[in-house]
Length: 294
Image (cartoon, rainbow, N blue to C red; front, side):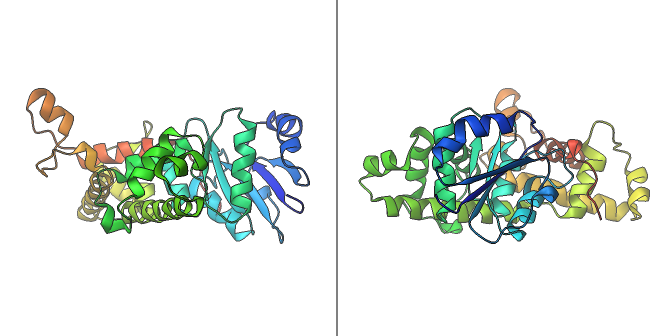
């Protein structure tokens, strides 16, 4: 790993001690940079570099925006987090991150992931495989460029700690497993991209969906300087994107009603536009976001 630079973006002050003590011996020849509290503090890099970035930063640039910022500075990005929601992780993957690790003290696994990403490959951990499978399981695989065996490989990656074991299970070479991983990443990026909220829609979801916000349509419309009809149409689009991003919630007969409520009580309950905004705000961590700098 000679010549490799590794940087961490996290607001945990204790992380640096753990990195020097536990990770550095596993990456001989690599330079471990100081731990940076936000992506704007990370310098640009010319040579090979992997930035491990917390999905949920206190910095206004967080999630997918943080990933894009680091990539623009020349870094390959590997995500980590303990409490990030599935959509937060996958939107950061869609923004260009090359893998995701749960924040557990497994430094050998972290070193292996860094090595994979530094080599230019995509890394599929068990934690990421579970999130990718949940995103794709109710989709038609062929619509997203997946081959017939890709979902089977993805299931195995959920259960096995290494790609080598998955390759042995399926009697595949390492290159074939990596190609499946590449197609899964591409499929997830396509799936997430189809239902990603625009910046204006994210702002609306935050204004309507956070606990300290208001669902008063007239007040929100006035704040956003739009008509009430435009406000209602914008909320309807947010609801449509939420339903398309969560097909597992809907009745099997295609109706836009909640499956669990239909099965439990027989009632056909719909998600309202305001409820969809509230769900988006929770799943994207919008209520914890600080305003971005201009």
